[in-house]
Length: 180
View 1 (cartoon, rainbow, N blue to C red):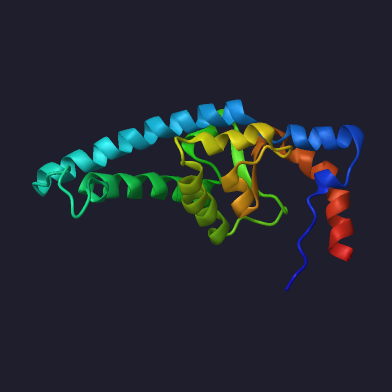
View 2 (cartoon, rainbow, N blue to C red; view 1 turned 90 degrees about the horizontal axis):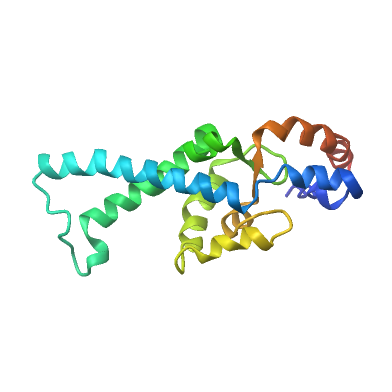
C-alpha cells in the first residue's frame, strides 16, 4: 500500500501557506456555484421529465410504498447525482463551478479517480444534504475550506486561475515527498 502524501499546506510556513490556502475556494463562491447548478439541474429535470411523462403517460406523483419512491423523486435524484458525477468526472467542475472559475482537485495532488468523484458527488452530497443542507456550512470553519463531501473524498475546490501559482509553490514539497 502506498504512503499518502501529506498535504503541503501543513508543511509550509508564513506567506507560502497563506498563498496556497488562498487558492482554496471559500463558502460564498461555492454557494453561488451551487445555486447556479441548482438552476441547471432544475432545468434539466423539466426538459427531461416532462416530455417523458407525457410520452409514456406517467403520473409523476404516483409511488410505491411511500411518496419518497415516486417516479418523480427517483428520476429527479438520478438527474441530480448524474449531473454532479459526470460533470466533475469529465470537467473537474460543474457548470456553476466553471462560471465561477473553480475546479475540484485531489487534496494529495494525484489525478482525481472515479471512486473519489462518486464518493464526493453521491455519498458526500447525500450526507451534506441533511438536515436542510446545513452540513455545507462546514466549509466556513474548516482551515482548508473543505466540506464533508470534500473530506470524505480527499478533495479540495480551488480557483482555477491560481492553480499554476499553487503548483509552483508546492513543487518542492511534492519532490520531497516522492523521494521518501
